[in-house]
Image (tube, rainbow over all chains, first blue to last red; front, side):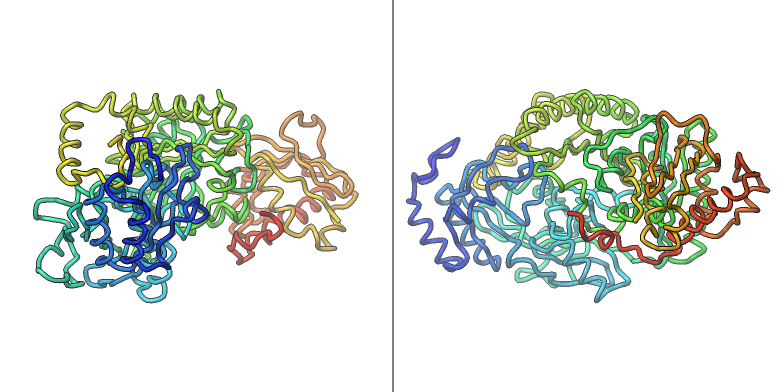
Length: 491
Length: 140
């Protein structure tokens, strides 16, 4: 019998009977309770404490999941959704044990591409690599946007957790790019939210074209980390794939000066994506795992992507970007802007892994441990955040790894200090550094996303009580038995 | 066989990439081996870097740079890119003072510098391969 932190799971039903029921729903090939199978689902690369699930199931369709949810709700068994386990926040660690639902193995189909209204209807297990390949081969005039994540990371997990991708300067949070969801709620009812809500039977594939204008129930599932239901279908927006594309590299001298640079370039409204990293990260990319900055080197490298449907449109955008950089120079900011295609050949082609997304980024995977303070940030605070966090890295003798993005043409930003470490060796130091970074950044108004439990605990201390009460009322109303990913956000 | 030091700062990383490009080619080896010269390259807005040709080794120094070097070259990053991608020739660059050289009258050193550096930069720039993941199959 599995003892969990909160409760004995098997008061209402024996573990053996649960296994039999799961076998009945999913078939014996798609259920396991063997430790050797469960172990990989018990941890991730972060500092979050591991916890074993009791079962892992591999679903093939929604009908099986409806049956599972009804059964779990009746018997108070936790359900934890899992796609590929690449998140950096312990999001799929079964905090209270229970049943991990692995969508990645069989519920991974691209169900439909609507060329006219430009969206893709996906099962939860579709990966970035799947989607890119499918679009490149069948719909080359359409594109999706991709994060600094490996091709085997999940698309749906990224959007419902408000990730940010390489069109984020244009479109903002990926949560905003969801047109519709199919979800199973705690009572086992299948609900469709978004414009696909018409119809008593299965939704028409062509009906997943908008999130609005009905009451927006999508928010009940976005950023809830699987605490409110199981998402079984998701429609995500696609965009035209323009023929003219180029990425420029800006190297900026002076730590805080990267703030105004990315803000001003973001406001030009001509850039698809802006991402900036500490210069040390550039060196990590080319096989220098513990780089030191030398005097005279720039402090940040920023990538600015531009695209155009016609050459003249593309050139006009590029000209405006260059003019903006010249204006920044006149304000005393030292920045050099170069074509990254040209520069990367003479520097190191390895930096191109940041351009050809999705990709395995060496600097993110070369150690056994990876964690971050990934946050949405008020961009006017960047000048304060950057030097302080840079100093914290140096205080702990860790090479600075600050990653930033400008979202939706500078309405807001992403501030993400990233920590790579050797598990079981540097853990104590890294946790202490991450804690210091989190305390400082939260106090400055940064809002972490894909948040680990220890961090939401910290946030709860300063979130207004009204929000917390509303959050708890909604959670209790929608999942009264707390079966969906219990423990997240300290539930 | 020529060994090129692995760079640890941005400029030496770049110079290492450029000078490693044809390190296994006999004509390059012939140019470099036993040249035994010190070349100071100053990329404006960055920092000076000394390239030391020492028998069959090419090394980089960004600290404790020698006061006496055989050739000093100064340009900005845009000139470096223009020279590499053939938008600007070396003579025109010197005449336009985009490429400033101290030791211009050391003709043999200057010519060899052009053959070693400029030619390598142009060859790296002209290589159509962009597949970073095929660069070095021996690592990782």
